[in-house]
Image (cartoon, rainbow over all chains, first blue to last red; front, side):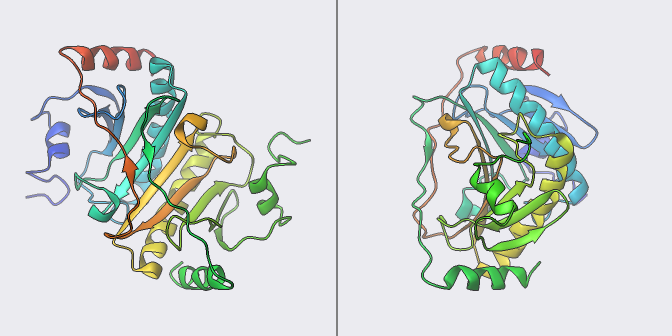
Length: 141
Length: 141
C-alpha cells in the first residue's frame, strides 16, 4: 500500500472516486468538496489529494497550494450562501476534535443567529509566565 | 494613513512595537506572537505584517507565507506545551467570532481534559440539496 494513498481512508476514497462526493474544485494536489454533515449548509472541506495525517505530516508545498484553494473556496462559499462570516478551522489530533485522520480544512459559512461557535474559555498568564512560554516555544523554532 | 498599516489597529501596533508582545518568529511579511488571552497557555497568533481585514482581503502571496509559518509554529507549540492536539482557527466577520479586524490565525494547543472546543451542531441536507449548494458555490469559482 502506498503510504500516501491510504486504502481505508474515506477522504482517499473520495479522491479516488470510490465514494460519492459533491466536489467543488481541484488542482493538481488539492481537492475541495462539501462536508456531508455541515455545520451550516455550504460547509466545505479542502484536502491534499495525498494522504497526510495532520499539519505536522503535511509538506509545506501542499500547504501553500491548500492556502490558495482555501481563500478561493472561502470567497465562493460566502457569496453562494450569503454568509455573514466564515470560519476556517483545522484540527490535529483527537484532543483537538479531529475525526478523519487525513489532513483537512473546514470552511464554514457563519450567520449571526446560527447558534454555533466555540466554547473557548480564555485563560490568563501569571506574571512572567508568558515570557516563559515564549522561551520554551522559541527553542523549537 | 497607509491603508496597509492601520494607525489604530492593535496588531499593527504590535508589528510597529508600539505595544508590547511576546514575539515568537517573523519573516519578511509575517509575524507570530503569543495571544495575551490564551485558550490554553502557548496559544499563538500568526498575522501578516500589513493590515488586511480578513481572508477575502488577504493577498495569496501573504497567505502562502502565513501557511509555512503556521506549520512551523504549530509544531513548536505542540512540542513546547506537550499538547495532545492543535487547532488552527481563523475567523472572518463578527458572525464568525472575529474580534480584531486584522487577519489572524489562532494556533491553539489542546488537551483531552481542557474543557474547550466547539459548539458545532451538524446539520443534514435534504434529498438533492447538497447538489444545489454544489452548483451555487461552483458558480463563484
